[in-house]
Image (cartoon, rainbow, N blue to C red; front, side, top):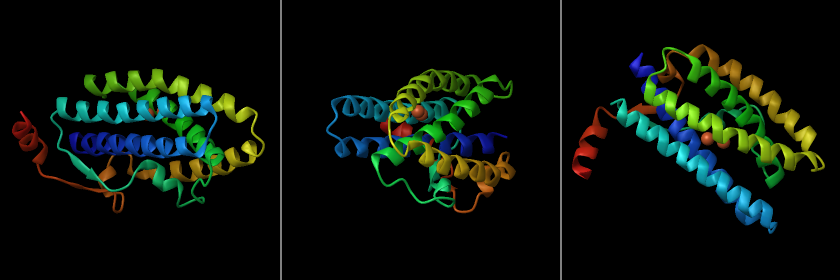
Length: 191
Ligand SMILES: [Fe+2]
Ligand SMILES: [Fe+2]
């Protein structure tokens, strides 16, 4: 159980960071002040989410897992990667809808330990704004609806692909590597 939790939270930590990096890179693709502001804030919040997972992992004294690929990377097995700001935001919208639903379920699960629940609740709040601004912006964009459908189809395929691994995430091929207690030592050395 705690092994699966360590892998799951490590996977979330890495995936939030990947989200932050993707959105942060998009800032240089626009000269619209509204998008610059929104993307910068969105990027910063995803990076904060990654930090919240890192803190929850430490508070729960879980082993750190070195994760090699984000949840988002699985989508690229089912569709081509987003290649423009519009495509990145369509992908973000579909992915965050999935995340939002998932986090609500995990926060409500009595098996979820308290530090993780706190992190979920914080992220559920932030996600409302992420879904809101991106959804609103996409409404006016030509081509958004087709693009959303493309990522929606990939989303269903990914959900089916990952479902059998729910309780043994470490068995997902090439997902990551356990680092045998190195985190405790590193933190002790930090202080
Ligand atoms: Fe997030
Ligand atoms: Fe988000």
